[in-house]
Image: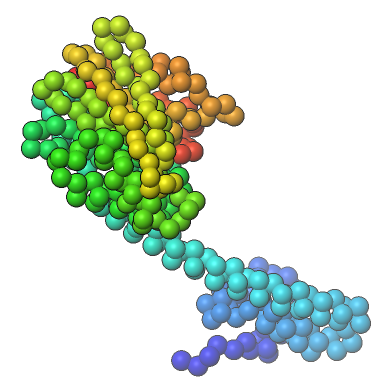
Length: 335
């Protein structure tokens, strides 16, 4: 197929016809001409140059001012054409990047997926919704041979594909630990060394809360690596208590020990684990208060655990006009 070229004579005749009649048919032909030019990657300055040539042939005595103005337009369109080409190139690269991110997000969902366990006497609900394609939050359930339940919830300080890779590393590290190492403080100490040795990006850290629940005794042990405090609801007192421990975020220093505390859950008690996407929900320009978060949780906690966390999420989603500002992760453990 021969390269597309402007036919100056045809363009001149079209221009002459339009100047004389200004009819709609000529405008339609000009529209088709523009579409054909775009299909053949004809630059705007080439069209302007053909227009100038046609004008000079139609009006040899074109005033100097008009001639100068057309040259000015030509130079302007040359700059425009270069800028437009660069813009198109950036759009293509952006499209490729968005496609890669979409693939990475699907892979992340597959790699980090976890099965909600069926533990006798325990009703579990969990939800994690990313504010963008890649999720910087992570939660994970693991059970040992005695059917004890390990629960991890984490948040990467730093988002995107590097965060997803860091979370994958955390997930497979958790899978590799033997049952004898399920103590929350020991788990965090080992994960801290893994992150410190393998994450070179000093601006990316990981907060994590890890708990171990013994379904026979109702005994819950927990440790935190700088993570958002959770809440313990005591049914006997009908009251929420904050649960947190001291500990640096993962990856700051390899020589860190983590405090471990415990509670004993009775019938009707509940533990709430979350990320800061819940507690830092904004209503307009104002951050929601902790008491308001607990009021929302109390409003739905009578429901089955999974239905409850989904209802709490929808509540906060509405408060933020359906635009999450941060990843939202929430876990209910109801005894």
